[in-house]
Image 1 (cartoon, rainbow, N blue to C red):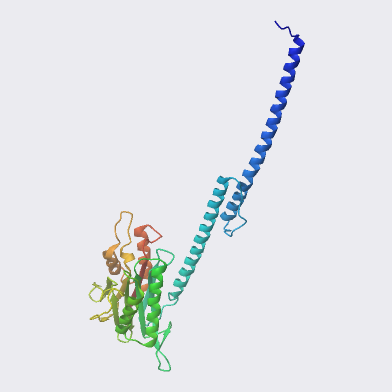
Image 2 (image 1 turned 45 degrees about the horizontal axis):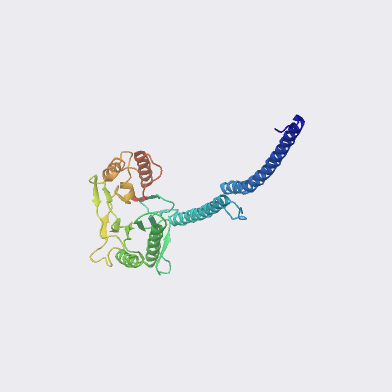
Length: 350
């Protein structure tokens, strides 16, 4: 048996408790310091990412100092954030380029239509995207004073040229193609080329320029006011609507040839001569108008176009065009078109 005084036992326990408490406090203090250091190491790059996110949300997409961190997850998050910033910067540049392309294309549309005595003219285009695969042009033609070629004017003229072109698809590529057609037509008109030659050379050039599977439908017309004859040629652009006032009827005309760029030659295709009587209306539209759909999936179709011509034949070309736009909106209940829509209309008043 061993006898130990109570005082000795109690003293050892007190010392042990004190040591344990001291060690525990030191461990807690060290842990707190380490946790604080880790939190700062984690929070600083996170705060930097938050500030960059706020900057990006305000449209500032320029690069800044890379975010460094020894934590792999934070580095991966910073890399993903930088990839997102670069992607947004590219998208914003693309959007600016698209808006610039749209503005350039819109500038090609005539701001003032030619004044042809005894006629009213109107044109309208509604792109599905920022840029359209449709285009139109109305050109006043007058012989140059020196006898060399012709001038393109917007005041009173006896002759006018027309264009409605529709490239496959819509967007920047088709917009470039139809803008090329417009430019070539204007140059040909300045040189006084016959309509048949214009169509032949357009087809040859587009056959060379367009990639495989691409083509352009187009309607070309030249109005001679003194004779009231409309000489026109359609390369795949149909249907064409001719309202005849004397018989109160509508002729629906087909295309004269395949679209430009399909065949290397336009053999056998010749322009059509159409006599316009008082009250006659000639309408050319792209397929986006006929193919406008309502909520039930129904197409606007040719019949509605014909009824609109018959019922509102007394309107001027401008008022009839405004009515068509309103009817398309009422029918589809959609402000944004699913396909490019373009129309050109001319009406003889006297």
